[in-house]
Length: 230
Image 1: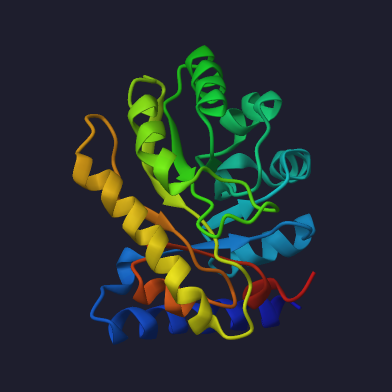
Image 2: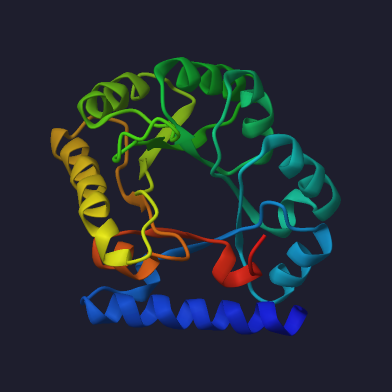
């Protein structure tokens, strides 16, 4: 399994490079987040040894248990799952970047917890571009208002937006949703809100990351293509 993961990482990195170069982008602009939810500590340690630098986790308690065993400094940790306000304290303690801030209530609680420990917490705003009831995220109309509100929270640093399209067998069908997410990020950027940085666009997973890169993604969240099916 160790060799397979190493092979998969190289293959994904190769596809990222090819997709970026194919649309005239610098591959170094794209960050690979290896999604390690439901994977064992040993599997994650193998991935780190094989070159994974950033790990994405979806479930707070599972992530905390693993990070405690692996060590926070062995990797950069991103939280990419739905976050409840009552788990904000743990998210602030363990994660470098929280991708899934979808309300002012949650942003205020993350800010409060970050202030307690003297941390500036990096966050992304999650946008529900498909308006699916099963997905979290604010809507496009509210995104700028949320970004403006977040700009006044001194212990948060807003870095960009995150989202995911519906699942399609054909990744081309995801393109309109990915394009829409990029437009939301750009719309917030154009407003030029003081104190926020809209340099990150977290979109693209194992099935559609090449299309996401073509549409401007700066962070791709890859699980299955690295670790295999869960």
